[in-house]
Length: 108
Image (cartoon, rainbow, N blue to C red; front, side, top):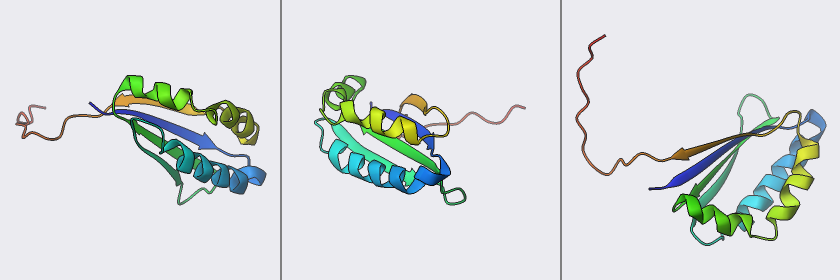
């Protein structure tokens, strides 16, 4: 099952453009890692200081390739000083949507 990490970031206003560029650079590097399905970066449409990263891996253990990428050691030290608050990192396992399901009737 696909393992997904979602990270929300909020830049200090004066660093929003720099963070945007860094995230684009990181995405282009990380999406090449073995067992990485994709590494998406997004910017909030209403607040240009808010960003989201969606990292998709073949399995949870796949993130080891990401963590062993030499670029990873430089990412946090560069990004953290640009942030207005700590990163909000969440881990998910994607639901299997390949099969039909039967949703129970509403009982509430």
